[in-house]
Length: 545
Image (cartoon, rainbow, N blue to C red; front, side, top):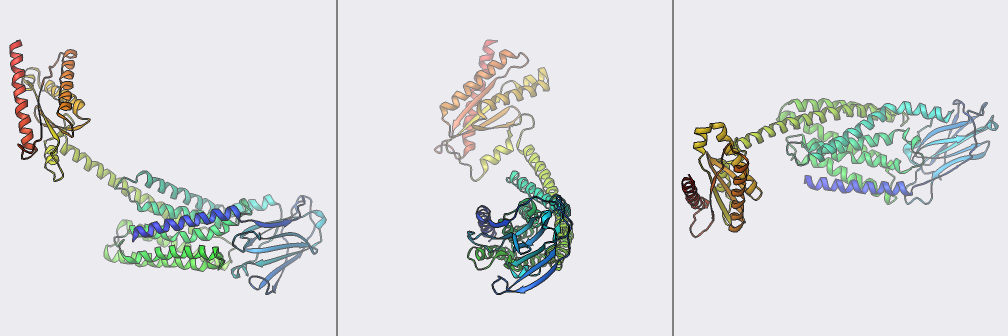
């Protein structure tokens, strides 16, 4: 079921990306304004009148009026933020600015989040300003804009500074999430790395992007892009699934079916939100409460499973950190939602994203530290395994490795050639030249054997002066050629080095089911051939002397 949820979420994520790209490429606004150069001044008082009109989408509209005072040539811009509202501005009854959705948009009936900038001139002094605002949704009925008369640059700077804490936290969340994703992709084959960090990274990136888009100042920097107003809700809906997957993988009860509930609800809810928008049933803004319900459902399941984890497993160090950070984020989220509904979206708190950034860093760093400790243990285990199966002097496999390889149930001796090697006069070398030169004899011989057979077979030091090679799916002719090459290398070494003389006796046999019960019978036949050659080499050496 977990794989089905992960793949389903991936499909929904791709759908949302495609829908956003379509909106970004096609959605436009019809903006009409009188462009005149001018200066700026401060905000003045205004009067608000609510007019009930059945022709409006929500059955009402608001009209704000105030009279312009003295304007200077350097201060003459009226700037205000509208939230999913159609806007018309008149000066003494003359329409100078309007904004509404383009009639060619495939779907959607909102202007989105917009900073409205109306240029004024000193000729407009004393004129009556009338601003008609028609909400696209009922949730925007009570949103009252803050009107500003002043320098465009000054107002932008003021808004950017006000939103800077939220933007910095959001960007850090995106960068942290991207780092986690890259970290997991880089270590995807490392079994010691906790892959749940990937979903924390995805959640972090989505949350950071949502917070950036949800910040009013974003629309000062990217004006006229309605698609981002829809991306706001898609990002919020998409966040539930990766966080739920991350949380379930941190619990011992990860197989419990209750974890599937917020995941399935998140996937289905995101599809419903997108489908309702595409089919003109409801705009995403109108389904914001559904997104909040999905988040509350996720929070409820996480709390239930945390309580269960404490009861069944106890309070481990990691669980304590997780509970503390979740409580920190919950407090921030509650404060953010409270501030959002109390101020009707005017003031955007950064407490939630700040607390999550702390949570993200604490849990992420803790998870990577655990992975590092596990990797250290794994490296030690591999080191011990290598010591158990490798000869310390030569680096070749040892007799234990040979026994495991040939004794395993999946070992097939068919088409296997056993090559047995013995080092002549090793004892004499130890007795006359010392054990240090004897060790050199063994190491140089092992190097030559490995150079001739190691690319196609496994080489073992069986003990003392005995070596063994297993060749699979090689012909006897190829084996003979490799032995001749080994002899040539020994002769070359002996010509170039006068300290020790390397002489390796060999025997080889192909496994034959007619005479061999197992591979050990083959090795015994190869051993007899090797001892015959060893005796012949000694006879030749004695005759030469």
